[in-house]
Amino acid sequence: QVQLVESGGGLVQPGGSLRLSCAASGVIGSINAMAWYRQAPGKQRELVARITTHGFTNHGDFVKGRFAISRDNAKNTVYLQMNSLKPEDTAVYYCNVEVLLGSLFHFWGQGTQVTVSS
Image (cartoon, rainbow, N blue to C red; front, side, top):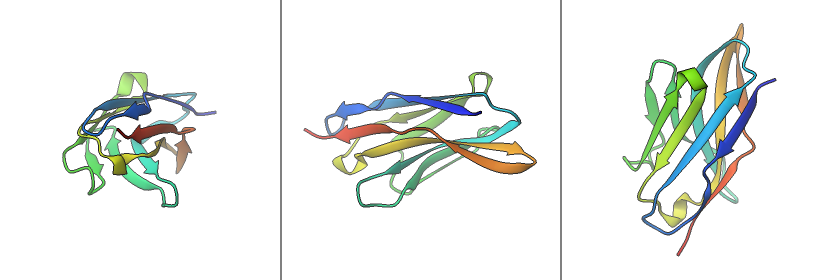
């Protein structure tokens, strides 16, 4: 069974930085991509950033160069470096892993809270 362990969330002041990590274990099959999503209270879950095994990335429009996603394929770990954080970035951030095993399966982490406030 795939397990995703997230870390790095917390409280940060506007303009500050945080680095999120997500380590996947128990993966059977090949990981197609790893991603971060977020969900703020009363809003739908939205893509923050996604990175494929070959390093291709895409981001939500709101990122605008502030966030960077990276991954360590050998460790099945994905990182999200978040800079210039704004109060509107406050949300629960979820790790997502796409596993190719015949079909494409999605697995989710438990979420980590990011709060941007002075």
